[in-house]
Length: 206
Image (cartoon, rainbow, N blue to C red):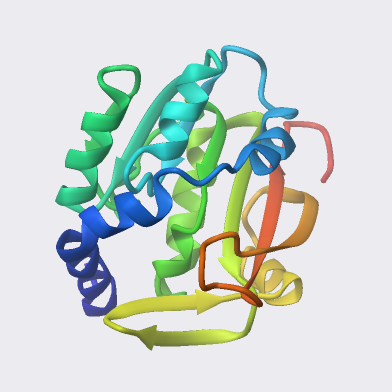
């Protein structure tokens, strides 16, 4: 793990309880609906960078089979408490992902934004490899440009254009792209870039 990534993980280990309070109750139903329209009911979802388990629990409650992971031991502990056995929760990093075509959907909500630009192509390729052909992948980033470090965390911000460049060579098609307002208290004016991508199916051009 590179230093910037390790620093971000350490930040979440120290602040996991606060994040559970600040983000655990957010209603992301509109984002779920955009993603789940591409995932077969009852399908298998990977929550990549699951944080405190809010979304893993939401998907499990909707009847999906969920595997979730996070690099932060404290986030994993809180996620396990939250999902209470309704989803599998693992402690691992993006660079550890080695699944091959096992998931109908991947949910990477505000998680890949902590991957350094130099490591992003490998992380993206690993996640794409975990998707079944035709599978859906949601990802979100703070809207902006470039890498920055804020209060001990690395952020890599994107516009649609910079994200398309970063994903060049990954066998996916960006099917839906939109921006949204941050709904957390005190975050008025912050915007997010949201994407739903589909994995290429053999014989069907993107």
